[in-house]
Image 1 (cartoon, helix red, strand yellow):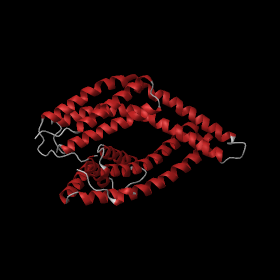
Image 2 (cartoon, rainbow, N blue to C red):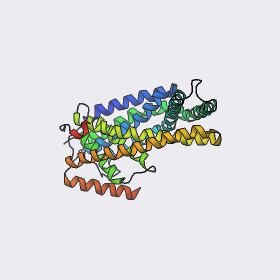
Image 3 (tube, one colour):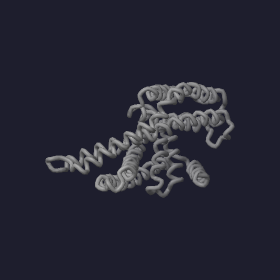
Image 4 (tube, helix red, strand yellow):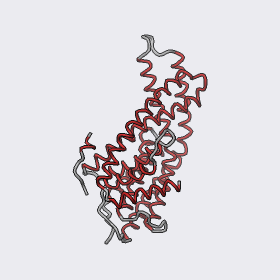
Length: 322
């Protein structure tokens, strides 16, 4: 039985979109292009993982041609994402700073924001902008080369998947793949705090992209929306955390007032993120337990334990409609 490659049109679309995005970055790495580069690489990685899972290749040997093709492609994707990530972070921080200044100004006396506070904000923004110029140079220099290599990686993976037979090939199920991935993540990272919450978000984001691959599947869409709520809440906190760190870095003691305001926002976002994560985690794990056979729950728990040591459609559930 030949592997079902209905994933290919989706994977092909993701590849074309990233290729276009990287081409834009080579000439004008603006805010949108940099953001699309980071998300585009993660979407392809999620599609690769889902395709391997649907082919019954979980736990396969690294020298399997299908695994090797996926890992080689992932190497390129990681390099592109790592180049885009610090630039995207700085773009987000500048946006948060602008919003905070506007909010503080609206609450200020009629003559506007205190001059000292405004000066601190302007100084921090200049530092962030200068840092972006430094960080964006490597991305701009090599983006076009990465774009040119994407077609070859996509073709190599599709060929490897098509030419080999999968003993356990099964119909792609985006919701199931996403819930399985989230269950592994939640089992591996049972205790969350400020030290590992961002890593939990990255795992949830990959699961979300798996769910979003199920276009037209209402249940998969609901799972994806639930994961996005969790991802956005944690991401909001992490962005303020990074802005607070840069405020300390660039302003020092001379930026105490602005830094204190930023840290206040950071702490509020952390509390909100932890509460929402706890709630959404419970809902998603409940969905997974309701759908997964007992043998799979044991397998996911065992796999998560190893990871920790080493480092169709369904009716819409009421719990995810909210």
